[in-house]
Image 1 (tube, rainbow, N blue to C red):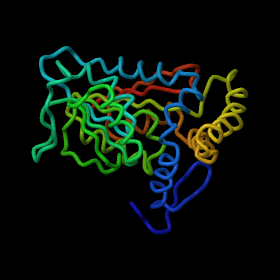
Image 2: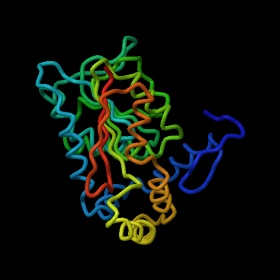
Image 3: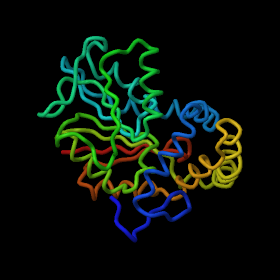
Length: 268
């Protein structure tokens, strides 16, 4: 991934291509312990509604066999723990794993590059008595450690804007999905309803960093968050990138005036 001389965006900064993942990891390591609290404060709890919509949209057909879901950038387990009861017949007895031939069994495989976030997710699962059905893996969205055609479902919530190469991450998503597999991407968007834009800009650039500094002690992390949203592709542009990656039946749904959007696509 490190190609000398090439740069990419980190918020509003240009940084060497090979440095972005380290910088992103540093941001999320800094705020991991207060990440979910900060999400609640920033969105007035709306992120929970959006995630519920995402998991409801997965809606796999009822079946006696368990489904395998890959949740990328899902360290704290918000999507994984919501989705698990829908994917396996009985959460407590599913045995799955990664073997030479790919994924065996079903359940959720959570990938994140940030170990601090994964530790929070593991602890949350244990607190809920969930011992089986979820695997927690340190892995990069652009270099997933799975064979082709391993998963029925793929989710990424508020993580795609943090990867170094969106195109590479989408290509990897398609690669690991089975034919007929479904991908959902939930993400903040830079394009909101025109009437909301002035208030949204004021809140984003002034209130969110201030809240971040008070709650997590790291104002810069939330300045990056706001800037990363502004640099992310608009809804139609992201849909075009999905098509270019070989995904089909691409659709998106704006949430709360376009503050967030849910993109859906399939590998056929």
